[in-house]
Length: 311
Image (cartoon, rainbow, N blue to C red; front, side, top):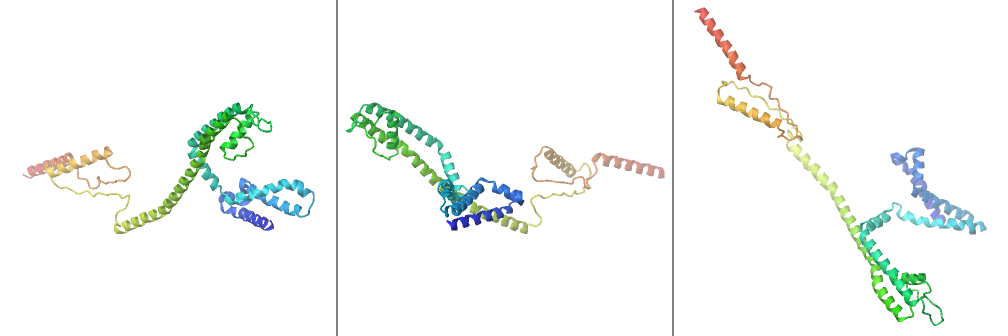
């Protein structure tokens, strides 16, 4: 007892001290917040109850046999240390929640059979007496107690049907009702097996996730080293090429048509919105055909006037 009290006391102090590694439990207020958690309160109660039992119970006082008797019950809460995180209860709750429909159905049918068969046994045995002249099924509560003991396969034997009608009903009830009350055990057993298998599969997947992430990162690094000029988001700068052809040349007309088509596709949103596509078509763009014609006309007229003037 002394070893357990020392162990749990030191563990509680260490847990309270190490709780400051989390940001919400930093400082005195944080430690108090940690101590106010339900599991911490239970730990403190267990330690204090054990200390009181050791201090008072060893002196042999009368107080140790009266008031301390209730405090000793709190020492049973030590078993909660085995599963402080509550993983077992969460597993049980998840299995019951998943198979709740099957459990409700089987229990409902089983309780219906228990109520009706107990009532039929009471009707058949209410006037029957045993060898001592005592009526074993004097009320419906006695018949219901007998039914509960029968379907749970306990079989105390304190109440036994005396008439052949009651024995027939009890035989049929024992065969069918027990089978329905045994179904929840099989449902929970299969549910636990499936849940454990699912947990093991999830752990296997969790072990594969870091390896897959490392493989993807390594592959990307290799790709980036082999292609240093390319990246995920690359801005494409297209240099304009000066075309000194005449306005009426088919090559210039084809270039203008291609640029118009590209501009139309951009306006319609054909390019992917996720990858930026930047172009600088205005850099070094040749003059329009109208301006070229006007400048050529002005230059031609001036040359003609100068020639005529010179002439």
